[in-house]
Length: 124
Image 1 (cartoon, rainbow, N blue to C red):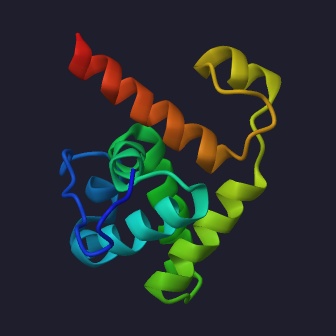
Image 2 (spheres, rainbow, N blue to C red; image 1 turned 60 degrees about the vertical axis):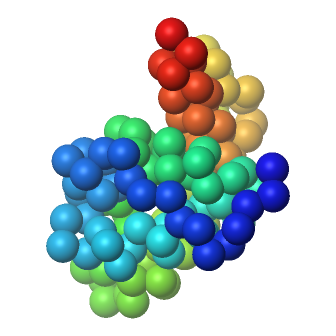
Image 3 (cartoon, helix red, strand yellow; image 1 turned 135 degrees about the vertical axis):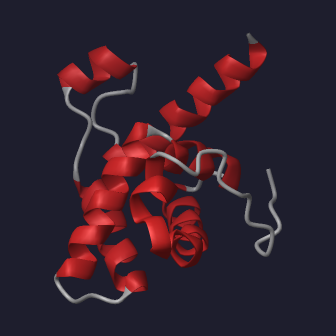
């Protein structure tokens, strides 16, 4: 799906996930994280939003916050979190528990899994 790079979808979860964890930095961090995740994984903005709105998005935000604590700029902290999540691989247990193919980068796997979960909820 071709997406308009200037159209950033809003969070659907202001209290939890990435937005809730980033708090006062959420408004500035949201479009940066959404664009970085979509670009890196090759998935669309809606899939990246599903990931960021999930519990996995909260953990991703923790990694961004850790980068900020180390003195990185917001963009650099997001980029560092993306790099780290792309380095980790889905192991057999995560594959079994979440239905994500073993060996995929964590970020790609959980973006796809989160988008699928949202689609299933909306179809029910």
